[in-house]
Length: 138
Ligand code: ZN
Image 1 (tube, protein in one colour):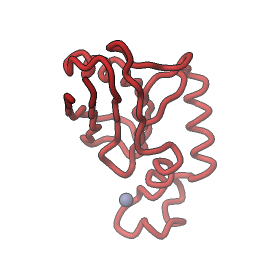
Image 2 (image 1 turned 180 degrees about the vertical axis):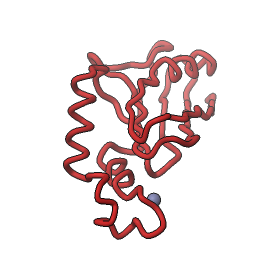
Image 3 (image 1 turned 90 degrees about the vertical axis):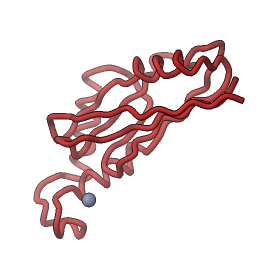
């Protein structure tokens, strides 16, 4: 069995954003040379997510509005976590949107269903953060 590991770095200039990272994950898969196996992609920070969904701007806006209703950023004083920081909402948003995605690798390709793409969800940006890509197989 072969194994491949790489960290992708992001520094999102806004507090929140959704970024399609499928091309970077595809590039990792090419680098790995693995043809059959699994890809794990996970955010290495507890205020960012990895998830699989559609690359459609209306849907991304809907996610943002929905998450802001569930866990509004303001007022920051409403959260117990915000004693020395202001990112409690980002922890909650990350919890809903998930930590990782696992995608099957078949015949050297990411074996997606229709419209599936891999996204990095940032909820407390404006600093450097990492995503782990781990690929195992042969
Ligand atoms: Zn925090």
